[in-house]
Length: 207
Length: 207
DNA sequence: CCTACCGATCGGTAGG
DNA sequence: CCTACCGATCGGTAGG
Image 1 (tube, rainbow over the protein chains, first blue to last red):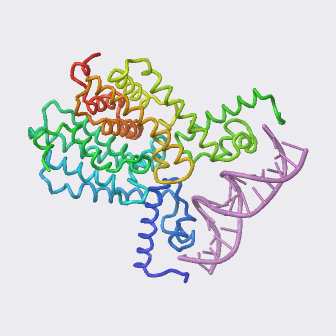
Image 2 (image 1 turned 135 degrees about the horizontal axis):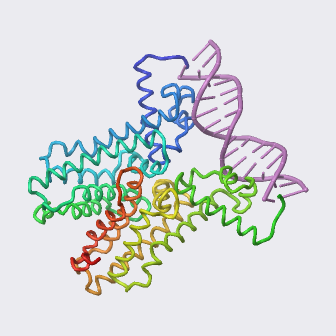
Image 3 (image 1 turned 120 degrees about the vertical axis):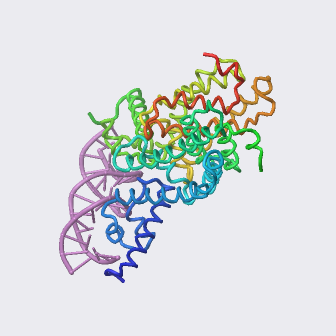
């Protein structure tokens, strides 16, 4: 044991650290991450862990990037090939509601948790988070606008308002999973999302 | 300086510690609270601060109690004297949306932040939080039921679904204040709440 | 990638 | 309510 291993091994252990860091942070918070705990989790020394990232902040930023990739994979990817407009928007909502109930990290949606943790701090993590959240917001607004332009949603629809509501619903649903007795938050969340979008009855009623 | 002061003085400094603790925790998290920082903020020694509460956990629990009282004061109290049913429900939503935009603590709504922080931990703080959140949920559901029974809302309304949606909206709106550019989250939140309730047009359009 | 270490700070206690 | 202290742990560095 000890000493530098091959580049491939180094990449593997780096990835393992990052996965573990993201999972821990989803439950305990990005600020609650500690190098020492992470080191013992992955069976390395503190210096070994820190060597991959330099500082705790860089580790936090990389964990955020990783979580953002997972979010895109879980929420955007399944909807990507649906028809642009209302069809894709509803596919996004379905995947999103499913993600909220069945998240990829043990503490729930990392992005939502980090948003709460850093909304009133400043610094590089706050800024990076803001960028991630805004990018997603723009994607949502554009999809809603497409649906309105295609006549799939009423022309009086307010895309910014709808995007705001969808985001609030997805974020706000998270703590209900564990803190409440709610059995099927995905169904509840999706129902609320459809109402907010103003889905025409014919579409809302389909299986 | 030094030595035990009068009971009244002791109560005052206890209250000052609690106010400060709640404010700090709203921004940095209940877990991020430290006795040392709190002590220097209020101009006391660590032992002096801890003497009032015994342990950090008791301090956290008391901060939660205090924040819950403030929440009731800001969100329930202004609506208390409105007519039971839809009138009171809408008054609650107005006060709630206002509270989200203009919270009593510098980090935003303490309850929402703590819900995220503790949803996937366990322990006494988690349990206490769960109690607070459930009590509020029941109050909401009852108010919605009253409105339905009075014929102010459609008889097909689902009180649990509506209460769930209102809570998710209020909680999820919090991070939008700082993390997004959103100017008037109170108005957006309130609009989303009214839509979720299914407020009859005549009521929704009033000033 | 390790051992060995740094100063700072953590929650909490003893004793007054 | 203070000073003085406890062992543990923090993020990070030196040196190999």
